[in-house]
Image (cartoon, rainbow, N blue to C red; front, side):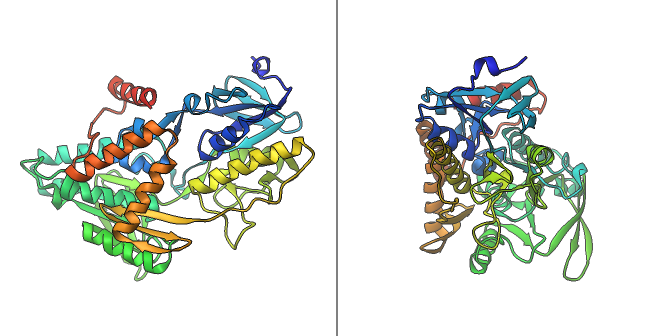
Length: 447
C-alpha cells in the first residue's frame, strides 16, 4: 500500500529519515515554512539523547529522562507529519522511498540515520560485548552490571567471584571513558554498604584502549589529565592494548608494545571501540553511486548533498564532511544540529531560486565526563579540567536535552545522585520479560 495518499507532492515535499539531532533540527527549522510539507520517518517514536545513555546503563537515570516523543517535540509544526517506520530502499530516479510497509515519494530527501557499532569484522562479539547506542542496549547493560554484583554476593568460589566483579570497557573515546568512570564511582561509592558478603569497592574496572592514549581526539595534556582522574576513581587504564578475542568468560588482550598476550577473566564486557554508518548509507551508495569511507559513511559535497544528486542530503554521524580541515567532522550532536539547520535553510533558499554558501561548522569545542566533579573540556576559549569542566559538561548536556521537562527531570535526578551518591534506576529486569517491555513503554510515554 502506498503512503502517497497521505503525503501529497504539492507543496514541496521534504522527507527526513531519522529523528536524531540532525533530522529533528532540520524538521524544526522547516516547520515554519508554509510552502513546504515535511515528513519525518524514524524506526522509533522518540528522540534519544545518546550522550547520556551511559547514565541509564549505570542506573543514574531512567530512559524517559533522556527520551522525548518525536510527535510532542515537533507536534506544533502544522506542515509536519511523523511516521514510525523503517526505510529499506530508494529509487533516486523516481524520487521514491520504499519502507517495510509501503512507499513514499519525495522532492527533497534528508538522510540522518546515524551510526551503529563497529566490531571490525568480529560481529560474533556483539552478544558478549554489547555497545551503547539504544535504550534497549542501555537496559541490557544495566541488567548485566547489577546482576553481576547480585551473583557475586552469593558466589562462594573466589575465582568466579573475581570474574563477576571484573568489568572491562573496550575503547577509550568519550563513551568508554564516561562509562568506565561511572562504573568505578558506582562500585566505590554508590553501592557502599549495599551488600554483606562482598565489598563492591573491590570490583575491577578495566579500560582498554588500542591507541597510545585515551580520548585521542582531545589535546595530549587533557588526555593525560583524564587518565589521572580515572585512575583516581579506581579505573585501571591500559593503553596500547588491543582486544584479540572476546568470549563469554573474558577478553584476550595483546599489548602492542611488547606483543605480550594475556587472557583476562570477566563476565561483564562492554564495547565502546568503534562505530560504522547505518545500513542506509550502503543503500545510498548502491542506488546513487555515492562514495563511502572506511566506516561506511557517505562522503558528501560541500553543501551536504550526495554527488550528482542535489536533492539528496546526508547529515549527522552518517555523513563524512571532509571539506573543513584535514579530517571529517566528528560525530557530535552540535555538528548534526548545525547541519540540520543548514539543510533546512538551503532547501528554502532553493525554492526562492537562491542558494547558500557551502556548509561550515562552528566548532565551540568538546567535553568528556570522567566522574563526580571531574571532566575535561577543550573549548575554543581554553582548556579546562576538574570541577570547572564538570560544571560546563553538566550545563551543556542539560541544555541539549530537547524538552524543558526533561531538563528539569535530569537536573533533579543528578542533584539527588550528587548529594546522596545513590542511583535512581537500579532495576534488574529480564531482557525478554513483560516487565522490561512495560518499563521501556512507560519511559517513552512519560518522556
